[in-house]
Length: 419
Image (cartoon, rainbow, N blue to C red; front, top):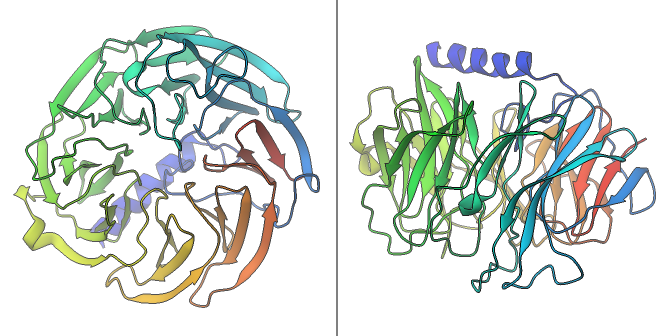
């Protein structure tokens, strides 16, 4: 009961700080895919129930975020049509659009990316981490190419590009904010680490190398999750070979669970004392891990309550709705399970292939596949499709949500769905 009260208070604090109409960070105000809005569109197409559609310069797969009537994105801009070439110079930009009409409010270049011969993964971009809006600031991250803070008029407050590392396939994971810290994982090809920057000036507050794991391939792209267990905050950060719990303020490692896996992407989710973590490639496994206040060291043998290997996701994050756990494989098979036991309730083909993380609103779960098709299902123990909608464009970024509006970023455009 004490755990539930603390978790409720943490969620309530997030909602108090973030207006219901805002979607200020990856996976929304509470960072778990839940949209606290009164209504969302159910049906649309590339032309129907679309308030506006605007081209987005450059290329990027960062998800849109929404705050106080504006939409924010990052992009990597190259003159001409050579967006995917490796050995070209790019401008790493932050873009701001008016959410009501789609007009550009401002565009700011943050970094010049030098030409590189190293290619990135075909499903990645040079601007994949999602921005964060907090207290009149926008924080943007370009992985090994740098991190920055701007005000909401586009003026750069600070920029830090001194934490370069050797990536494979480009950048990916999004930072999170904990008090005055901006924390992100840097699971590079070699010497992976996790780091916290002072969000006021961009200077390193702490930096911690990943402890030894049996995994040879070191690179991953995950976003950490902050949890609160019996009054003690823990930062849950998946990496190649293990998921780690850290003290968020000091960076001290608390405990870890090891596994065989690399290129880990999904963001962990907490529910009633279990944290759900996905292990990445080659064969992904979803783990239900019990979290305790005083756990220390390697707790693999004692704290893994259950695991699911069949059709576990590699890329989309999981979702808890009304005491049920939902996830979707990269191939488009959706699964509903009992979160405390891992017992499968149903497993059905929904869409696919998939990269975006699902969201929930008012009893509906919204999936978005890589072909631009949104599948809406009814949350519950029976699989029921409510709508299928397509914009017929490539889509890897996750939704942003506003009151009565869904924002979808495609390869070339940004859509506002809903009138």
